[in-house]
Length: 260
Image (cartoon, rainbow, N blue to C red; front, side, top):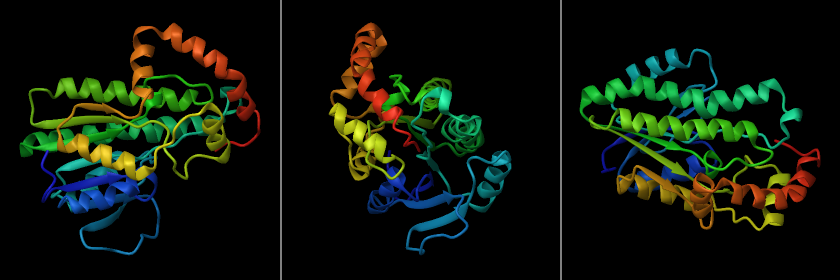
């Protein structure tokens, strides 16, 4: 995928991985339109625009229609927004469940539903979905998040195959644990206790950009996480046993009362 002179609509571009993507995209010659629900935008800069949009809104489809009319130059979308909540299912509110499913999965489906016809008619376009290792491996304390990311992975795979005879590209990138402000301290401490590596957002952003430039259909990040994804798909009992050994440590942080 050539990035020069392209215009990408970026969801999740005001923090974490999405924010780290902005500079590499600009350096590659792309323009970026950052969609945010924040009422106040950061300072404007060359090549970057901000638009108001709420991925959790019931009227998301209408907001996408309006945005699309205002910005017909958009020829790529990067869905990098997400919510998580580290807690036992019994301790999770209905609102927290709904928020994760709405932002992580429903919004991605509606965004694709809106832009696929437009990109098909234009003869070019790309949809990039940022998932998670937890979209392939169920992890205690992240039941709703895993459900939404498993759904995102399945959706992007099905959509890619549905559009295989069209000019629309569908790319799925699954980072492992990433050091962003979305993680509460309990999660950072848990990863440290389990010996899990947390990648800086800039490293993940670089991998996403590389996957785009190489026209990869899917990319999973991190070792041994990539291996665990394969094992979990073929021999899930092995991962079950490994998780069971880790469960006392995980439960200690789950029961700490510190959640996001």
